[in-house]
Image (cartoon, rainbow, N blue to C red; front, side, top):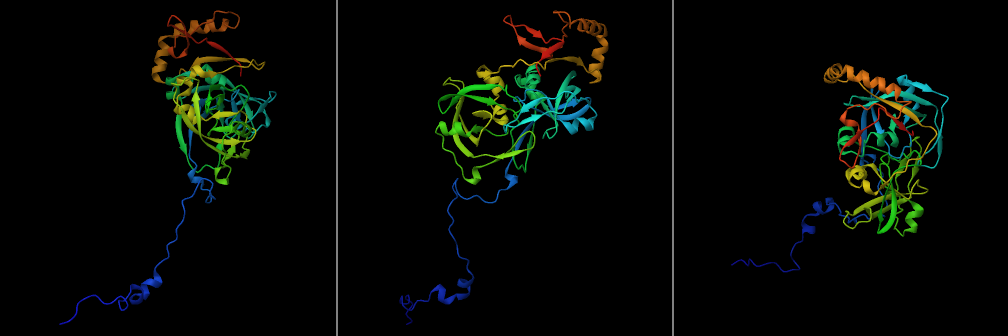
Length: 374
């Protein structure tokens, strides 16, 4: 009888002894620890930088353009070579100095006067744009005009006028601070009272480095936590790092939602705390939390009137409406002419120009001529 039991341990063949060809070709597995936030980063991939652009489709002298609405721009601005290419009327005798996010001051090269209207809206505005030689956007709408037209402060206007577009392969994030009278939200940073700049021209959250250190916030300073910022003139700066999961709350009411935000730390930032466009639009900050918004308009000698009119070629329906009300429009035009010397100007009946709620529930229509400090 053959013994079918197991062979003794000493005589049992092993896999290594019987299959040497497999052992020689088997790859060696290396264990790699999970990277931490402060680990040495891999080579940066620009494809990982995504940004949502909030544009305002518009027409300038009949030319289509995607304008940027910047609540931190004290006036309307335009790229100089864009104005030249479009053949706009430019006054080269007008120049001004404007501060940008890097702390530098730029000098404009003139003022272009154009007829502006929002896409798919009939109203026309005669606006002035200050020219910047190296402006990274063709057209920037400033806070006074955005405020007068309630572009951001009305949900209806924001939905109809502001369009989103996602861009990839970005090498830097924009910080288009232009001026010194930007609106600010009052709120709490980690439970401490703090004002925050509401900047629709900022693509990321910004915090001043000195402020972050004074507040005791931990700053991650490794290279992979630093970001390149781009300013309105195309110049760039590298941030000092990141402060993660910082508590921000609009106002001081405990019933208001708390937001955990990641801030890019910038040395000598134009404000202690800057809220980005994406956060402001996603939270509907200008309408939901307007009671916490502080917005002081500076008096400026460079003030002017801009006229409001109706584009009668806007659509066949608008044309029919205009023809039907020819007599009424003529009467309004005559009153408009005398409005420069009268305190009782004519007011159009267009519902979209209601800009101020009165205690009795009625609305005042916007004046045919509006005085703006641009």
